[in-house]
Length: 114
Length: 113
Image 1 (cartoon, rainbow over the protein chains, first blue to last red):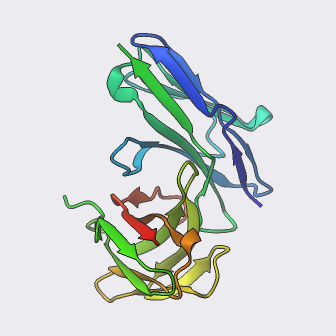
Image 2: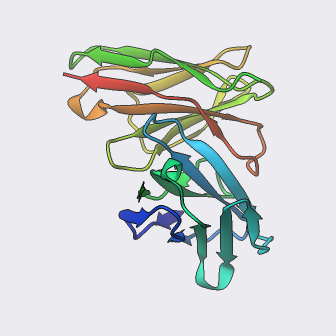
């Protein structure tokens, strides 16, 4: 079974603050894939990143960075110098090599105020 | 490059009715998945279609069925609608290998009264 836990339900920050969204996962699969998606108020899920279980290298893309740690089963997402446009619900998702389904966490609602 | 498209955008149905939702995948994609997202929750996997066959199904009753056409587009059918079926229905497309990310459409908001 696959499980994703996003313990933070809502986070509110002031513009330009850094913010980290936590994601903890559970799987028995030896190979698996982790994802982050952004869902703005419009409702469409926007793909942000995919990470393979055999690649623990952290990644940075502009103001976004991801920290993948297999030892703690975590795949955290940091936004540096947050902006109002970052306000959205962010989902962490997991897919194991035993299936095709994406298993989503419940999401973290991020509100960035000016 | 056309992304995933879904129709209709919104739909209101009465309990007991049947509904059909439609999805066209992103250009170059041949695999389509459907998800149900209740308010305040993460999307839940309904099923995935590849080569016009359902190749994996989530924990949803048989009232939920689907179809994939030769042009890779897909339909989701829900029979005997219940109030609890009210949700955002998301279609996602991808390449067939499980390592690839899924790209989502804007969704269809279904309200059952």
